[in-house]
Image 1 (spheres, one colour):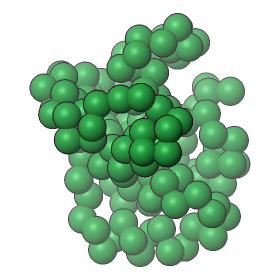
Image 2 (spheres, rainbow, N blue to C red):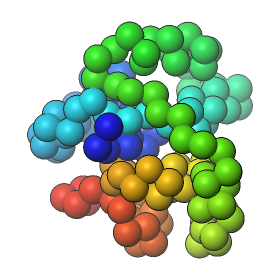
Image 3 (cartoon, rainbow, N blue to C red):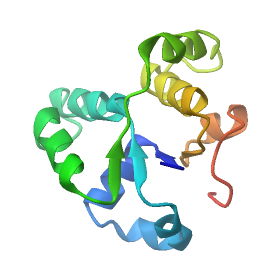
Image 4 (spheres, rainbow, N blue to C red):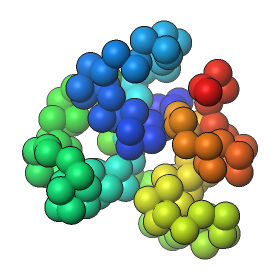
Length: 127
């Protein structure tokens, strides 16, 4: 894994979103890393009615057999240690995804402006 996808990128890939046409270089970074934090965020969004999807367990199984993805599970202690230092965001999912990127020392693929302004390991070329 040399790239971690933010949750919205996971959704875009799974939905074959036309938004991905703006990121033709993305295919050069396969397999894409997916954080278990994204699975939790997707489940949360489904539970509050903002997203219709498979349950997180079914999604994890689907990602596990898709050769484009690697579900990466970093050790919890370093993940939390990094997350504790990220006071620039109050979004727990963003905080943990950035911490995952820091723990593994891999770039995070995101369009989130707050993350891009504060996290040094983001993929360049995303506006």
